[in-house]
Length: 485
Image (cartoon, rainbow, N blue to C red; front, side, top):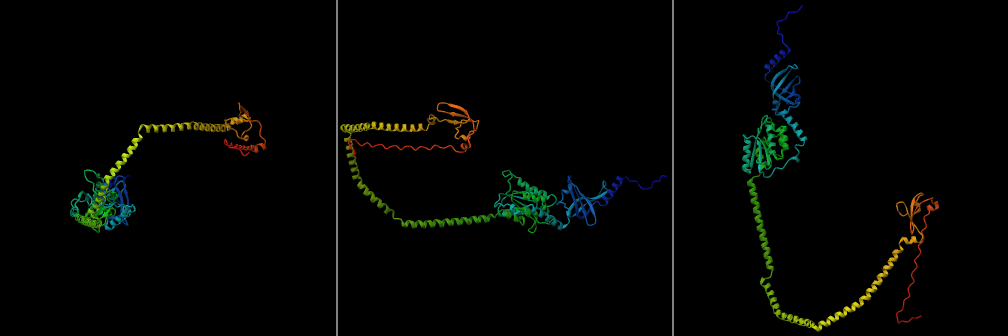
Protein backbone atom coordinates (compact mmCIF):
# COMPACT_ATOMS: atom_id res chain seq x y z
CA UNK A 1 0.00 0.00 0.00
CA UNK A 2 1.40 3.50 -1.05
CA UNK A 3 2.62 5.79 1.78
CA UNK A 4 0.93 9.23 2.03
CA UNK A 5 3.06 12.29 1.12
CA UNK A 6 4.40 14.42 3.99
CA UNK A 7 4.14 18.18 4.49
CA UNK A 8 7.78 18.82 3.37
CA UNK A 9 8.30 20.78 0.12
CA UNK A 10 9.73 18.66 -2.62
CA UNK A 11 12.72 20.38 -4.39
CA UNK A 12 14.25 19.51 -7.68
CA UNK A 13 18.03 19.21 -7.69
CA UNK A 14 18.43 22.51 -9.57
CA UNK A 15 16.02 24.31 -7.22
CA UNK A 16 17.88 23.08 -4.17
CA UNK A 17 21.27 24.00 -5.66
CA UNK A 18 19.98 27.47 -6.60
CA UNK A 19 18.48 28.02 -3.15
CA UNK A 20 21.73 26.97 -1.54
CA UNK A 21 23.65 29.37 -3.85
CA UNK A 22 21.44 32.31 -2.87
CA UNK A 23 21.69 31.45 0.83
CA UNK A 24 25.51 31.30 0.71
CA UNK A 25 25.82 34.53 -1.30
CA UNK A 26 23.42 36.37 1.02
CA UNK A 27 25.23 35.18 4.12
CA UNK A 28 28.75 35.74 2.75
CA UNK A 29 28.20 38.54 0.20
CA UNK A 30 31.46 40.29 1.15
CA UNK A 31 34.29 38.51 2.94
CA UNK A 32 37.94 39.22 3.60
CA UNK A 33 40.13 36.11 3.77
CA UNK A 34 43.80 35.70 4.56
CA UNK A 35 45.67 32.59 3.52
CA UNK A 36 48.31 31.00 1.34
CA UNK A 37 47.92 30.53 -2.41
CA UNK A 38 47.84 26.90 -3.52
CA UNK A 39 47.42 25.58 -7.04
CA UNK A 40 47.34 28.55 -9.51
CA UNK A 41 46.02 28.02 -13.07
CA UNK A 42 45.64 30.77 -15.68
CA UNK A 43 43.08 29.74 -18.30
CA UNK A 44 43.29 30.69 -21.99
CA UNK A 45 40.31 32.97 -21.43
CA UNK A 46 42.33 35.03 -18.94
CA UNK A 47 40.47 33.84 -15.82
CA UNK A 48 42.66 32.73 -12.90
CA UNK A 49 41.74 29.63 -10.88
CA UNK A 50 43.55 28.97 -7.60
CA UNK A 51 43.15 27.70 -4.03
CA UNK A 52 43.51 29.68 -0.84
CA UNK A 53 44.38 27.54 2.14
CA UNK A 54 45.72 27.33 5.64
CA UNK A 55 46.85 24.33 7.66
CA UNK A 56 43.29 22.90 8.09
CA UNK A 57 41.13 23.92 5.08
CA UNK A 58 41.17 24.78 1.36
CA UNK A 59 38.77 27.06 -0.55
CA UNK A 60 38.60 27.02 -4.32
CA UNK A 61 38.80 30.56 -5.73
CA UNK A 62 38.38 32.26 -9.08
CA UNK A 63 39.34 35.71 -10.37
CA UNK A 64 37.64 36.74 -13.57
CA UNK A 65 39.75 38.19 -16.42
CA UNK A 66 38.92 41.83 -15.67
CA UNK A 67 39.72 41.42 -11.97
CA UNK A 68 42.98 39.52 -12.66
CA UNK A 69 44.16 42.33 -14.95
CA UNK A 70 44.04 44.75 -12.00
CA UNK A 71 46.32 42.68 -9.78
CA UNK A 72 49.52 44.56 -8.93
CA UNK A 73 51.52 41.34 -8.74
CA UNK A 74 51.49 37.92 -10.31
CA UNK A 75 49.76 35.26 -8.16
CA UNK A 76 52.22 32.50 -7.32
CA UNK A 77 51.88 29.31 -5.29
CA UNK A 78 53.04 29.69 -1.70
CA UNK A 79 52.44 33.45 -1.52
CA UNK A 80 50.44 34.68 1.50
CA UNK A 81 47.68 37.05 0.39
CA UNK A 82 44.57 38.88 1.59
CA UNK A 83 41.51 38.40 -0.64
CA UNK A 84 38.27 40.32 -0.73
CA UNK A 85 35.25 38.92 -2.52
CA UNK A 86 32.09 36.91 -2.05
CA UNK A 87 31.40 33.26 -1.40
CA UNK A 88 29.32 31.42 -3.98
CA UNK A 89 28.64 27.89 -5.17
CA UNK A 90 29.15 26.02 -8.40
CA UNK A 91 26.05 23.81 -8.82
CA UNK A 92 27.63 21.79 -11.62
CA UNK A 93 30.08 20.21 -9.15
CA UNK A 94 28.27 20.80 -5.84
CA UNK A 95 31.16 22.88 -4.46
CA UNK A 96 31.48 26.31 -3.02
CA UNK A 97 34.07 28.81 -4.25
CA UNK A 98 35.33 32.29 -3.52
CA UNK A 99 34.75 34.90 -6.24
CA UNK A 100 37.76 37.26 -5.89
CA UNK A 101 37.28 41.02 -6.29
CA UNK A 102 40.75 42.17 -5.06
CA UNK A 103 43.91 40.54 -3.83
CA UNK A 104 46.94 42.01 -2.04
CA UNK A 105 50.08 40.42 -0.58
CA UNK A 106 49.73 39.86 3.14
CA UNK A 107 52.07 42.51 4.53
CA UNK A 108 55.49 43.84 3.67
CA UNK A 109 57.16 40.53 4.43
CA UNK A 110 55.35 38.80 1.59
CA UNK A 111 56.06 41.67 -0.77
CA UNK A 112 59.72 41.61 0.12
CA UNK A 113 59.86 37.87 -0.47
CA UNK A 114 58.25 38.34 -3.87
CA UNK A 115 60.62 41.23 -4.58
CA UNK A 116 63.66 39.10 -3.77
CA UNK A 117 62.41 36.27 -5.95
CA UNK A 118 61.93 38.59 -8.92
CA UNK A 119 65.30 40.19 -8.28
CA UNK A 120 67.01 36.78 -8.48
CA UNK A 121 65.11 35.95 -11.67
CA UNK A 122 66.11 39.16 -13.46
CA UNK A 123 69.70 38.90 -12.21
CA UNK A 124 69.90 35.37 -13.62
CA UNK A 125 68.72 36.70 -17.00
CA UNK A 126 71.54 39.27 -16.98
CA UNK A 127 69.31 42.34 -16.85
CA UNK A 128 71.40 43.82 -14.02
CA UNK A 129 74.75 43.27 -15.78
CA UNK A 130 76.87 46.46 -15.61
CA UNK A 131 78.08 45.82 -19.16
CA UNK A 132 74.55 46.57 -20.44
CA UNK A 133 74.45 50.05 -18.90
CA UNK A 134 74.81 53.04 -21.24
CA UNK A 135 76.65 56.27 -20.46
CA UNK A 136 74.53 59.36 -19.77
CA UNK A 137 75.16 62.11 -22.38
CA UNK A 138 77.10 65.09 -21.00
CA UNK A 139 74.67 67.75 -22.25
CA UNK A 140 71.41 66.30 -23.64
CA UNK A 141 69.38 68.43 -25.99
CA UNK A 142 66.02 66.93 -24.99
CA UNK A 143 65.08 65.19 -21.72
CA UNK A 144 62.09 62.84 -21.47
CA UNK A 145 60.36 62.58 -18.07
CA UNK A 146 57.97 59.77 -17.11
CA UNK A 147 56.00 60.75 -14.01
CA UNK A 148 52.69 62.16 -12.79
CA UNK A 149 51.87 65.59 -14.26
CA UNK A 150 50.20 66.79 -11.02
CA UNK A 151 52.76 65.85 -8.37
CA UNK A 152 55.64 67.84 -6.94
CA UNK A 153 58.16 65.60 -8.73
CA UNK A 154 57.87 67.24 -12.16
CA UNK A 155 58.06 70.71 -10.58
CA UNK A 156 61.22 69.76 -8.67
CA UNK A 157 62.84 68.39 -11.85
CA UNK A 158 61.94 71.46 -13.94
CA UNK A 159 63.10 73.85 -11.20
CA UNK A 160 66.43 72.02 -10.84
CA UNK A 161 67.02 71.96 -14.59
CA UNK A 162 66.27 75.68 -14.77
CA UNK A 163 68.86 76.36 -12.07
CA UNK A 164 71.60 74.18 -13.58
CA UNK A 165 71.18 74.21 -17.36
CA UNK A 166 67.75 74.76 -18.99
CA UNK A 167 66.91 72.03 -21.50
CA UNK A 168 63.89 71.08 -23.58
CA UNK A 169 61.73 68.69 -21.49
CA UNK A 170 59.08 66.26 -22.78
CA UNK A 171 56.63 64.94 -20.15
CA UNK A 172 54.80 61.64 -20.64
CA UNK A 173 52.07 61.73 -17.97
CA UNK A 174 51.44 58.41 -16.21
CA UNK A 175 49.97 57.04 -13.00
CA UNK A 176 52.76 56.30 -10.52
CA UNK A 177 50.57 54.31 -8.11
CA UNK A 178 47.68 51.89 -8.49
CA UNK A 179 46.61 49.03 -10.66
CA UNK A 180 47.33 50.61 -14.08
CA UNK A 181 50.54 52.37 -13.09
CA UNK A 182 52.95 49.65 -14.25
CA UNK A 183 51.33 49.33 -17.67
CA UNK A 184 51.39 53.10 -18.28
CA UNK A 185 55.02 53.46 -17.15
CA UNK A 186 56.17 50.65 -19.49
CA UNK A 187 54.14 52.15 -22.33
CA UNK A 188 55.73 55.58 -21.76
CA UNK A 189 59.29 54.16 -21.86
CA UNK A 190 58.59 52.25 -25.06
CA UNK A 191 56.78 55.26 -26.55
CA UNK A 192 59.78 57.55 -26.07
CA UNK A 193 62.04 54.94 -27.70
CA UNK A 194 59.65 54.61 -30.65
CA UNK A 195 59.93 58.32 -31.56
CA UNK A 196 61.86 58.85 -34.83
CA UNK A 197 65.13 60.72 -34.62
CA UNK A 198 64.14 63.37 -37.17
CA UNK A 199 60.41 63.38 -36.45
CA UNK A 200 58.23 66.37 -35.57
CA UNK A 201 58.54 65.48 -31.86
CA UNK A 202 62.21 65.43 -30.84
CA UNK A 203 63.47 62.10 -29.54
CA UNK A 204 64.89 62.48 -26.00
CA UNK A 205 68.60 61.97 -25.41
CA UNK A 206 67.98 60.75 -21.85
CA UNK A 207 64.94 59.52 -19.87
CA UNK A 208 64.04 60.15 -16.22
CA UNK A 209 61.51 57.83 -14.56
CA UNK A 210 60.59 59.52 -11.30
CA UNK A 211 58.20 59.28 -8.34
CA UNK A 212 58.15 60.62 -4.81
CA UNK A 213 58.53 58.54 -1.67
CA UNK A 214 55.98 56.07 -0.30
CA UNK A 215 55.45 52.64 1.17
CA UNK A 216 56.47 49.45 -0.58
CA UNK A 217 52.88 49.01 -1.70
CA UNK A 218 52.86 52.51 -3.20
CA UNK A 219 56.10 51.86 -5.11
CA UNK A 220 55.16 48.36 -6.18
CA UNK A 221 54.39 49.38 -9.77
CA UNK A 222 58.11 49.98 -10.35
CA UNK A 223 58.81 46.37 -9.32
CA UNK A 224 56.53 44.88 -11.95
CA UNK A 225 58.08 42.73 -14.67
CA UNK A 226 56.60 44.80 -17.50
CA UNK A 227 58.33 47.95 -16.20
CA UNK A 228 61.67 46.23 -15.58
CA UNK A 229 61.78 44.72 -19.08
CA UNK A 230 60.76 48.00 -20.73
CA UNK A 231 63.60 49.79 -18.91
CA UNK A 232 66.07 47.05 -19.89
CA UNK A 233 65.05 47.29 -23.56
CA UNK A 234 65.34 51.09 -23.67
CA UNK A 235 67.85 52.31 -26.27
CA UNK A 236 67.76 55.77 -24.66
CA UNK A 237 69.89 56.07 -21.48
CA UNK A 238 67.55 55.93 -18.45
CA UNK A 239 67.85 57.45 -14.97
CA UNK A 240 65.58 56.04 -12.27
CA UNK A 241 64.50 58.34 -9.42
CA UNK A 242 61.85 56.42 -7.52
CA UNK A 243 61.17 57.20 -3.87
CA UNK A 244 63.67 58.54 -1.38
CA UNK A 245 67.32 57.58 -1.01
CA UNK A 246 66.50 54.55 1.16
CA UNK A 247 63.80 53.22 -1.20
CA UNK A 248 64.94 50.60 -3.72
CA UNK A 249 62.88 49.17 -6.58
CA UNK A 250 63.78 46.76 -9.38
CA UNK A 251 63.88 49.53 -11.97
CA UNK A 252 66.84 50.98 -10.04
CA UNK A 253 68.90 47.86 -10.79
CA UNK A 254 68.12 47.75 -14.51
CA UNK A 255 68.41 51.49 -15.23
CA UNK A 256 71.65 53.04 -16.48
CA UNK A 257 71.91 55.37 -13.45
CA UNK A 258 70.03 55.53 -10.14
CA UNK A 259 69.31 58.86 -8.51
CA UNK A 260 68.43 59.08 -4.80
CA UNK A 261 65.69 61.66 -5.51
CA UNK A 262 64.02 63.25 -8.57
CA UNK A 263 66.10 66.37 -7.92
CA UNK A 264 69.23 64.23 -7.98
CA UNK A 265 68.14 62.81 -11.34
CA UNK A 266 67.98 66.33 -12.78
CA UNK A 267 71.48 66.99 -11.45
CA UNK A 268 72.76 63.82 -13.14
CA UNK A 269 71.11 64.73 -16.44
CA UNK A 270 72.76 68.14 -17.00
CA UNK A 271 75.88 69.93 -15.77
CA UNK A 272 75.85 73.34 -14.07
CA UNK A 273 75.94 76.04 -16.72
CA UNK A 274 77.56 78.59 -14.40
CA UNK A 275 80.34 76.14 -13.56
CA UNK A 276 80.89 75.38 -17.23
CA UNK A 277 81.02 79.09 -18.03
CA UNK A 278 83.48 79.61 -15.19
CA UNK A 279 85.64 76.73 -16.43
CA UNK A 280 85.58 78.12 -19.96
CA UNK A 281 86.53 81.59 -18.72
CA UNK A 282 89.39 80.11 -16.69
CA UNK A 283 90.61 78.11 -19.67
CA UNK A 284 90.36 81.17 -21.90
CA UNK A 285 92.37 83.21 -19.39
CA UNK A 286 95.00 80.48 -19.22
CA UNK A 287 95.12 80.37 -23.02
CA UNK A 288 95.59 84.12 -23.31
CA UNK A 289 98.23 84.10 -20.59
CA UNK A 290 100.06 81.22 -22.24
CA UNK A 291 99.99 82.94 -25.63
CA UNK A 292 101.28 86.16 -24.11
CA UNK A 293 104.16 84.37 -22.42
CA UNK A 294 104.95 82.49 -25.62
CA UNK A 295 104.99 85.70 -27.69
CA UNK A 296 107.17 87.49 -25.14
CA UNK A 297 109.60 84.56 -25.09
CA UNK A 298 109.82 84.57 -28.88
CA UNK A 299 110.32 88.34 -28.85
CA UNK A 300 113.25 87.97 -26.43
CA UNK A 301 114.80 85.23 -28.57
CA UNK A 302 114.39 87.39 -31.69
CA UNK A 303 116.11 90.30 -30.02
CA UNK A 304 119.05 88.07 -29.11
CA UNK A 305 119.34 86.87 -32.70
CA UNK A 306 119.16 90.44 -34.01
CA UNK A 307 122.05 91.52 -31.79
CA UNK A 308 124.20 88.75 -33.27
CA UNK A 309 123.54 89.90 -36.86
CA UNK A 310 125.78 92.54 -38.56
CA UNK A 311 124.44 95.98 -39.33
CA UNK A 312 122.52 96.24 -42.60
CA UNK A 313 124.74 99.13 -43.69
CA UNK A 314 127.83 96.93 -43.31
CA UNK A 315 126.28 94.26 -45.51
CA UNK A 316 125.46 96.84 -48.17
CA UNK A 317 128.94 98.42 -48.05
CA UNK A 318 130.60 95.15 -49.01
CA UNK A 319 128.22 94.55 -51.88
CA UNK A 320 128.54 98.16 -53.04
CA UNK A 321 132.38 97.92 -53.14
CA UNK A 322 132.22 94.67 -55.12
CA UNK A 323 129.81 96.26 -57.55
CA UNK A 324 132.16 99.20 -58.15
CA UNK A 325 135.07 96.84 -58.86
CA UNK A 326 133.03 94.82 -61.34
CA UNK A 327 131.78 97.97 -63.02
CA UNK A 328 135.35 99.22 -63.50
CA UNK A 329 136.32 96.00 -65.27
CA UNK A 330 133.22 95.86 -67.40
CA UNK A 331 134.25 98.34 -70.14
CA UNK A 332 137.68 96.77 -70.86
CA UNK A 333 136.15 93.30 -70.85
CA UNK A 334 133.54 94.33 -73.38
CA UNK A 335 136.22 95.83 -75.64
CA UNK A 336 138.42 92.70 -75.43
CA UNK A 337 135.48 90.45 -76.17
CA UNK A 338 134.53 92.51 -79.19
CA UNK A 339 138.13 92.33 -80.50
CA UNK A 340 138.23 88.55 -80.09
CA UNK A 341 134.94 88.14 -81.94
CA UNK A 342 136.20 90.40 -84.74
CA UNK A 343 139.41 88.40 -85.19
CA UNK A 344 137.49 85.12 -85.34
CA UNK A 345 135.11 86.59 -87.85
CA UNK A 346 138.05 87.56 -90.08
CA UNK A 347 139.38 84.00 -89.91
CA UNK A 348 136.02 82.60 -90.91
CA UNK A 349 135.74 85.14 -93.67
CA UNK A 350 139.09 84.07 -95.08
CA UNK A 351 137.97 80.46 -95.08
CA UNK A 352 134.88 81.35 -97.12
CA UNK A 353 136.92 82.57 -100.13
CA UNK A 354 136.41 80.56 -103.46
CA UNK A 355 139.99 79.30 -103.58
CA UNK A 356 139.76 77.98 -100.03
CA UNK A 357 136.38 76.38 -100.71
CA UNK A 358 137.63 74.63 -103.85
CA UNK A 359 140.67 73.35 -102.03
CA UNK A 360 138.50 72.00 -99.23
CA UNK A 361 136.10 70.31 -101.68
CA UNK A 362 139.00 68.73 -103.55
CA UNK A 363 140.44 67.33 -100.35
CA UNK A 364 137.13 65.84 -99.32
CA UNK A 365 136.65 64.28 -102.79
CA UNK A 366 140.08 62.67 -102.63
CA UNK A 367 139.29 61.15 -99.22
CA UNK A 368 135.98 59.75 -100.51
CA UNK A 369 137.65 58.21 -103.60
CA UNK A 370 140.33 56.61 -101.46
CA UNK A 371 137.76 55.07 -99.13
CA UNK A 372 135.68 53.80 -102.10
CA UNK A 373 138.75 52.12 -103.60
CA UNK A 374 139.40 50.28 -100.34
CA UNK A 375 135.72 49.42 -99.72
CA UNK A 376 135.28 47.14 -102.79
CA UNK A 377 138.04 44.57 -101.92
CA UNK A 378 136.97 44.60 -98.28
CA UNK A 379 133.36 43.72 -99.22
CA UNK A 380 134.56 40.92 -101.52
CA UNK A 381 136.74 39.40 -98.78
CA UNK A 382 133.83 39.58 -96.32
CA UNK A 383 131.46 37.92 -98.83
CA UNK A 384 133.96 35.08 -99.45
CA UNK A 385 134.33 34.48 -95.71
CA UNK A 386 130.57 34.38 -95.14
CA UNK A 387 130.04 32.06 -98.14
CA UNK A 388 132.72 29.68 -96.85
CA UNK A 389 131.14 29.65 -93.38
CA UNK A 390 127.68 29.02 -94.85
CA UNK A 391 128.94 26.05 -96.87
CA UNK A 392 130.58 24.58 -93.79
CA UNK A 393 127.36 24.89 -91.76
CA UNK A 394 125.34 23.34 -94.62
CA UNK A 395 127.66 20.35 -94.75
CA UNK A 396 127.22 19.86 -91.00
CA UNK A 397 123.46 19.97 -91.31
CA UNK A 398 123.52 17.54 -94.22
CA UNK A 399 125.67 15.17 -92.15
CA UNK A 400 122.94 14.96 -89.49
CA UNK A 401 120.16 14.12 -92.05
CA UNK A 402 118.96 10.57 -91.33
CA UNK A 403 118.22 9.98 -95.06
CA UNK A 404 121.97 9.84 -95.62
CA UNK A 405 122.10 6.98 -93.13
CA UNK A 406 119.30 5.21 -95.01
CA UNK A 407 121.38 5.47 -98.19
CA UNK A 408 124.00 3.32 -96.49
CA UNK A 409 121.47 0.42 -96.12
CA UNK A 410 119.78 1.14 -92.80
CA UNK A 411 115.99 1.31 -92.23
CA UNK A 412 113.69 3.14 -89.73
CA UNK A 413 111.15 0.97 -87.85
CA UNK A 414 107.84 2.58 -86.78
CA UNK A 415 104.97 0.98 -84.83
CA UNK A 416 101.26 1.09 -85.76
CA UNK A 417 100.95 4.61 -84.24
CA UNK A 418 103.85 5.92 -86.33
CA UNK A 419 106.24 6.21 -83.38
CA UNK A 420 109.86 5.17 -83.93
CA UNK A 421 110.77 1.84 -82.34
CA UNK A 422 114.09 2.22 -80.55
CA UNK A 423 114.35 -1.28 -78.98
CA UNK A 424 113.28 -4.66 -80.34
CA UNK A 425 112.11 -5.80 -76.91
CA UNK A 426 109.24 -3.36 -77.19
CA UNK A 427 107.76 -5.39 -80.08
CA UNK A 428 105.77 -8.60 -79.65
CA UNK A 429 104.92 -11.29 -82.15
CA UNK A 430 102.14 -10.18 -84.43
CA UNK A 431 102.74 -6.44 -84.03
CA UNK A 432 102.43 -4.46 -87.25
CA UNK A 433 105.34 -2.22 -88.09
CA UNK A 434 106.39 0.03 -90.95
CA UNK A 435 109.91 -0.08 -92.43
CA UNK A 436 111.26 3.03 -94.06
CA UNK A 437 114.09 2.53 -96.56
CA UNK A 438 115.94 5.12 -98.56
CA UNK A 439 113.62 4.77 -101.57
CA UNK A 440 110.30 3.35 -100.24
CA UNK A 441 108.27 2.37 -97.13
CA UNK A 442 106.98 -1.18 -96.53
CA UNK A 443 104.53 -2.75 -94.02
CA UNK A 444 105.61 -5.78 -92.01
CA UNK A 445 104.47 -8.02 -89.13
CA UNK A 446 106.77 -9.22 -86.32
CA UNK A 447 107.19 -13.01 -86.42
CA UNK A 448 109.05 -15.10 -83.87
CA UNK A 449 110.33 -14.41 -80.36
CA UNK A 450 113.84 -13.13 -79.56
CA UNK A 451 116.17 -15.46 -77.69
CA UNK A 452 116.69 -14.91 -73.96
CA UNK A 453 120.24 -13.77 -74.46
CA UNK A 454 119.22 -11.38 -77.15
CA UNK A 455 116.23 -10.14 -75.12
CA UNK A 456 118.23 -9.59 -71.96
CA UNK A 457 121.44 -8.23 -73.43
CA UNK A 458 121.32 -4.67 -74.58
CA UNK A 459 122.24 -3.99 -78.16
CA UNK A 460 125.90 -3.11 -78.50
CA UNK A 461 126.51 0.47 -79.24
CA UNK A 462 129.08 0.97 -81.97
CA UNK A 463 132.05 2.83 -80.67
CA UNK A 464 132.39 6.23 -82.14
CA UNK A 465 135.40 6.49 -84.36
CA UNK A 466 137.74 9.29 -83.38
CA UNK A 467 137.76 12.04 -85.89
CA UNK A 468 141.16 12.38 -87.57
CA UNK A 469 142.97 15.51 -86.61
CA UNK A 470 143.51 17.82 -89.55
CA UNK A 471 147.08 18.07 -90.69
CA UNK A 472 148.57 21.47 -90.11
CA UNK A 473 148.94 23.41 -93.31
CA UNK A 474 152.43 24.31 -94.30
CA UNK A 475 153.02 27.96 -93.92
CA UNK A 476 153.86 29.61 -97.19
CA UNK A 477 156.77 31.96 -96.78
CA UNK A 478 156.26 35.45 -97.95
CA UNK A 479 157.36 36.37 -101.40
CA UNK A 480 160.92 37.37 -101.62
CA UNK A 481 161.96 35.46 -98.45
CA UNK A 482 164.24 32.42 -98.91
CA UNK A 483 164.12 29.11 -97.12
CA UNK A 484 166.65 27.52 -94.82
CA UNK A 485 166.18 24.06 -96.36
